[in-house]
Amino acid sequence: MTRRAASGRRRDDQGGVTVPPIGEQVEVERFRIEIDGETFHLRGVATQEHMEELAEIVNAKIDEVRRAHPNLPRHRIAILVALNLADELVSLRKENEELFELLEETR
Image 1 (cartoon, rainbow, N blue to C red):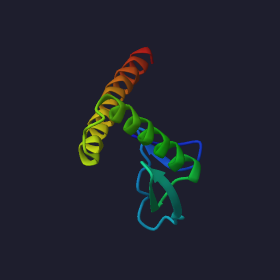
Image 2: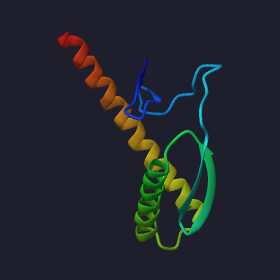
Image 3: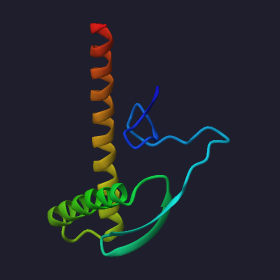
């Protein structure tokens, strides 16, 4: 299921920005964000504020893992961060699905 987000962009049921239909004009933005002290220049369909929020989340997770495992190399920290974020994503998708099912039951 796809629905419009407040930004006007379509979002899928998991909250991700979807690819527009063929022929629909989309403005691609350029972003500069910093993750773990490294600057990234990205392009995509989002706002600067959204990308900064994502960078803040990733940086917080990196700091959390680094505090817990100060001797891990950077690439292993990145893998643990990716696993932690994937775990959160799966849990939230399941919760979202359960909530949609409850909503459908009440209709």
